Image (cartoon, rainbow, N blue to C red):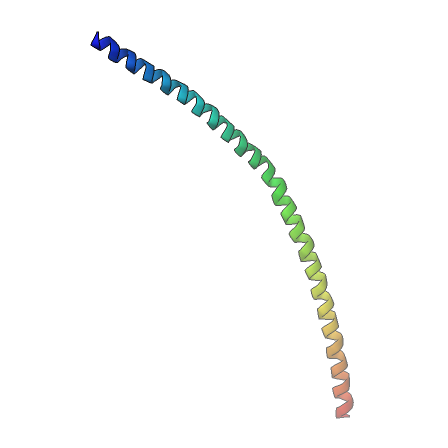
Length: 87
């Protein structure tokens, strides 16, 4: 009888483990689903970030072109003044 009690105890523990394993499988499936959703949304986020950076870089490029042009005009004026002084 003692042996049957031990076997019953082992069987009940195995049933508990099976239930826990089933619950664990469900949780893993939920995690996988969440990860796949994140992976699907990431390219859109990255694209939006790159587009934002591109716009800022374009603005920076235009600002730099303006500054270079402005500096060239100032250099030209200084050169003219220097030439007048020398002549």
